[in-house]
Image (tube, rainbow, N blue to C red; front, side, top):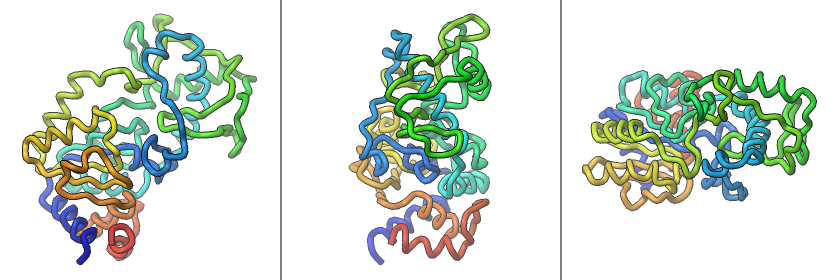
Length: 305
């Protein structure tokens, strides 16, 4: 038995015992067509995410963000959960998970059927007013932006699908454009304040109650499983360090190295969808939309063998 197959067996046993806390990152969603910043699909991009400070201090920056995000939103809403998301949902439905904490803002865990998901960095599916704090749906904002920009044509975009122009999709749901001149930004209907996606920007802090809730969930888990995160950002890494201090085993499944590797009891460098589908199959479970149990067992060799 090689080391990857042995590590896979430990992963399956952790699920079998149950009470697993999952910490997921962008690598889990790349198979749904949403890129990451630092994994294999992110290495070819030099995208610099907008910071909270730039967004709030510059009208031009907000115009640039919302124009690019307006195009990217069509891609986010068109993305479907992949086999990895479906496997996580199946594990939750069988009562084997203690918590699902995601650093992703795409809502694909919930779309796959997961119920109790803590969105550490918020969600692109909501918009928050920086003035009155009111939260509204991104779908409503999309309608308002379409109405405010009926004839706006993006500059520097390449048409890649009917009704969708983009050059390069970024993980935070926007696309790269040469110019966003002429795009009209809309404000809060309730108070006229600035609207911001309900996500944590770089340079912005995760709300403390949410941070503390995640610490509590990790503390009560039997295993912390990291899925598709390089753990480059401290907001996720701190939970791995916390588990390590408490003696809670840390299992990492990710393509490429992570900052948490020295703290991991088990480390698997393997595709997320195949690996999780194989784990679900090994437990005798079947995630909706995933391959059959036989196919899942065969994926053990392909994914981690």
